[in-house]
Image (cartoon, rainbow, N blue to C red; front, top):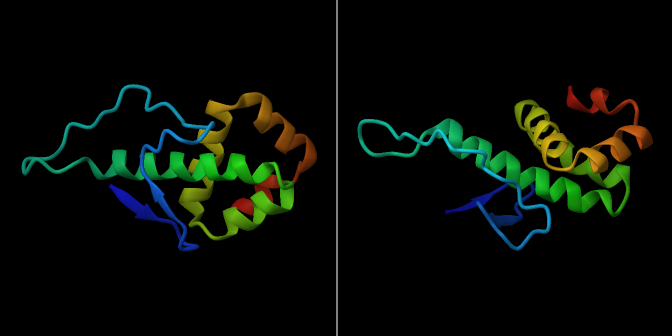
Length: 107
């Protein structure tokens, strides 16, 4: 399934080409009565894709991450940071050390 983020960069959900590919940690993808995917799982997969993009942006500096996050909804921003911390705690610590006011970006 292909999705597009708010800055019109097409990405593939579950893309394995990123070095920051995030694990699904046992999907709850039970589907609904019509056989449709659980929208919460789809949302989380998309947020994990955004987290991988944020991790890539950190190579270009904290401002690049901040700019990327500003293109997302508040819920997506928080989800990205949670997924980022879960997948790469050391890299997340680096971000927090370089930008201790990162929580202000979430509003």
